[in-house]
Length: 220
Image (cartoon, rainbow, N blue to C red; front, side, top):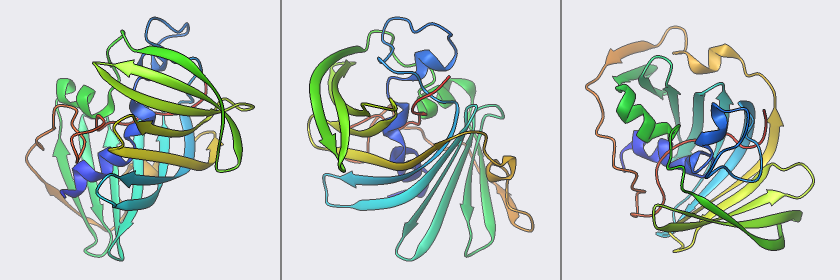
């Protein structure tokens, strides 16, 4: 699986359906019944239908995104910069950064900053995830169904899962607040290679499930 696509998919949950709240003071149609933070960090575990499970770290700061994951003992880092319309793939072992331009329209597909405003949220009921009391919601968007579990006390999303079982993502150790600006820049001393623009899939997950994008959870 191409790393850039995997890295983007790893944070699909927090991107899906939250875009209308990122640029609006008052939630509009399609907005979830909680408010996303623009600055936060969180641990995450992504589980796919094919049995693959990945643990990593997610950072978000006013639209800038960094995700860190480990696969086969190799560290993988993706930095998404909508403000500069580019994606950075950081390879720590090689001390190399692959920089790929992404135009504004394709960046929307990556970050889902402008998802369909017709998303519908229905309250399912109370539930518990990882020992945390949650409120469960059913979200319907573009003909697909996803479930959210939101911390009943803090309103921070704890888990998202597709109805068809193609993926689920759980989030722990969520901490709101500004992130170190250096997290969203190429590491000092790394070679930066300019790459051609990546082919952004039309919202498809690695298994054809959830859209591949990124979102913050809870905040102002």
